[in-house]
Amino acid sequence: MGYRDVKFNRDSKFLVTGGAGFIGSNLCEALLDMGYSVRCLDNFSTGKRENIESFLDNEKFELIEGDIRDFDTCMRACEGMDYVSHQAAWGSVPRSIEMPLLYEDINIGGTINMMEAARQQKVKRFVYASSSSVYGDEPNLPKREDRVGKVLSPYALTKKTDEEYGRLYTELYGLETIGFRYFNVFGRRQDPNGAYAAVIPRFIKALLNGEAPTINGDGKQSRDFTYIDNVIEANIKGMAAPKEAAGQAYNIAYGGRVYLIDLYNKLCEILGVDTEPKYGPGRAGDIKHSNADISKARELLGYAPDYSFDDGIRLAIDWYKENL
Figure (cartoon, rainbow, N blue to C red):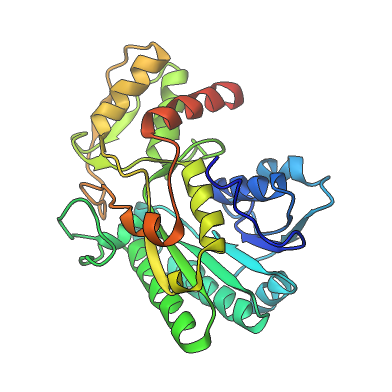
């Protein structure tokens, strides 16, 4: 594990917002395994209690059930914390197109609440989730942090706005912020259910149940699928990175490129099934191709992802076989 040699003061305290969610619960688990005190803030709108159930008896774990849209809750959550990893957000490009006001409220309003609370409570470092969706219609591959296009969805706009606030909070107020443009994260605890489920868990669940999943579009769109443990490494290294790294956003991916139809065929091969997929219309707001240049994160954060797509997909399938 590339992050286990990262050292903080033994009495360091970490707040993970959205700590009962997919990424947040895995981060809580990693920090607890490293021996640190962890506080989780979640309102369970998308997070799940079962994701954190095994931590509740740990004396170093604390749960605050609350909403980032409430500033007093954010202040209480940040009190006494050294580091904040802000993962609380609503995901899904299609859902954001249906509910733009809600996305503005949670992803922008909630994030500013958290940054301001972290500033007032004198938090040392504030890392937060951004998204590869900020690249919008910028056509060049691989995606580089200094080249972004016109955003294609309210979700992408909320993340782009969060990055601007992150920059301002570093430049104006001295709060050290670091943003992560996640590229299609997958792995254990990612929810396979619902209309807005991510593609990998949705496909795996359907194939395990003997059903034919639907590919949106022609299957020729490509993604830089990124295994969860790479994202955990980025968060931990981001909290420990030198001060000069602050005020910026970084691509967090493996640096690969997998076409959706190839992903589907790979899943069929590993699962030993021969199921023809269905095809549906493409999704509004989706980026056609996604592949990350991760050299900036390597250089400034020491990010060195251990898990390729092939490594991660086998681990993910094993988890879903046991937990679905």
